[in-house]
Amino acid sequence: MADQSVQIHGKNFVPYLSETEIKEKIKEMATIISRDYADKKPLFIAILNGAFMFASDLFKELTIEAEISFIKLASYSGTKSTGKVLTAIGLDADINGRHVVIIEDIVDTGKTLSSFLPQLEHQGPASIKLAALLTKPEAKTHPIDINYLCFSIPNKFVVGYGLDYDGLGRNLKEIYQLG
Image 1 (cartoon, helix red, strand yellow):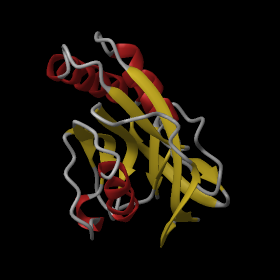
Image 2: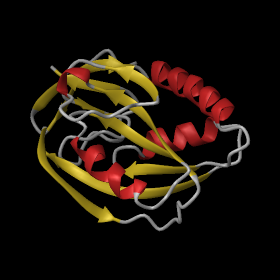
Image 3: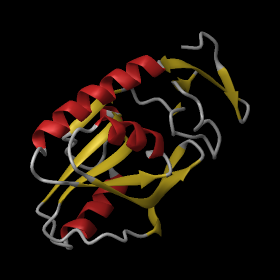
Image 4: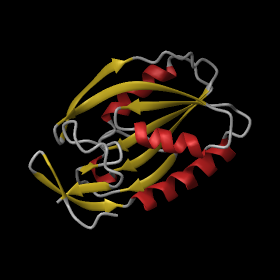
């Protein structure tokens, strides 16, 4: 992992989780999900834009038959949640009777998912589970159950590995936190 901080939009971010730590946790998660869904052929729904790297790495580690689709939801402006959930790209897969696993980069307040999950439930899936790379328990204001989790982190703003600060930082292989 890089030992130095990075500057994004004039703010200093310090190293927090290495690429190796991230990949190891994803591999562990994929093993558990593969076991849990051994004969179910689940549909994974990745939340864009932040979860694209996590979704890709998780999907590559699965040892089961599975499908993946993408949806774009947004509730951030800068480093703060706006409190409003916007759907920019809708789900194009039929989830009726399917086992669904939502792939999310970070569960912060839980507002985004608390608005999105009821929309999915109305479509009649057999089950809905949530796989998240990160969660901030201290920030949670909406009750969201995370079934598969890589890391629980402090309530600090993070970038890298798909997470951004106003569009920048997604390409970093590690996760950095606001210094």
